[in-house]
Image (cartoon, rainbow, N blue to C red):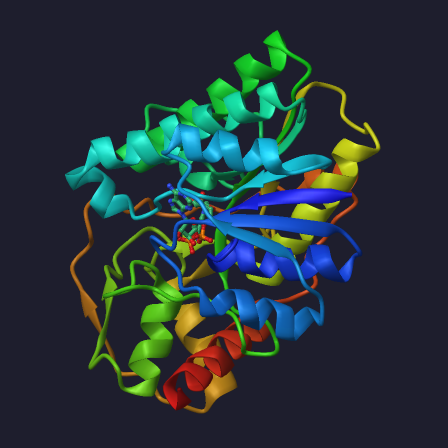
Length: 337
Ligand SMILES: NC(=O)c1ccc[n+]([C@@H]2O[C@H](COP(=O)([O-])OP(=O)(O)OC[C@H]3O[C@@H](n4cnc5c(N)ncnc54)[C@H](O)[C@@H]3O)[C@@H](O)[C@H]2O)c1
């Protein structure tokens, strides 16, 4: 089976291509390198020992995208990662996000329809739940989005649902909680450009001395240690879930043309617990300080993953310490380059 991976040079896309190749799938990937580097492609090949096709394509360019997809033979399914993902930037530049994430997805669906490709796995996010009471399952209400980024994920899910009702399209939307960590080879991992938006790269960059101090945004929340709680999941577990989703579509295990699954560990960890896990696996005392709360942060969220366990036949393999150890190994490998 040949799978098209959009955003294949990115953080989650690169780990997913490794898993697909290792499971024997053929892969063709595209990326515009807006938030990634071409060298990632060679590293995927080194890890897997396998080759795959790649083209530099921008999904906003409808003509280019359609031409590229029409030239491909036998694409069975698409895994669609390509998007912009910085919440803060989306508040400042909403049109960039609606064009890339929403219009880009519409372009992709048009190209798929014209070429008879009827299966897609979509990268959604737990941000669609906003401030919900955890553990959150897939039936939780979807409130008004708190950022243009979050809104693009809600809108894309609706676009995909509508298109699956109108055509033969079959959709799996995967709502990721907080992906962290890196491949055990330390050849691929998260490559934040500039100041990291996410906690774990900020921790590892502080640990290695690239940043002076980590600020914990608030320790007076109504949680056991006062800091915010999230569901941190190893990126390789996320990648493996995409292979399970492709299998779920191929074997027609779905009850509806549009299926949605949470991808988390089912466990919440506080910011201080993540710092402690980092210190335990690295032996590095992290330089951090407590600062004021940050506007827009929700208090706590973690997933109810029962549906993915039951229907995708998928479970996480890695715990928080293993995830933090892999993130640290990756940061150390980056420092050597
Ligand atoms: N990492 C997270 O915390 C997280 C959480 C929830 C959902 N997601 C979603 O998962 C997906 C992948 O996230 P990631 O962390 O791997 O991000 P990433 O930025 O590392 O990867 C996205 C890739 O898409 C590419 N891209 C962006 N716009 C493109 C365009 N117009 N044409 C072609 N390629 C384009 C980028 O260059 C990048 O390589 C995104 O849709 C993101 O919104 C990520």
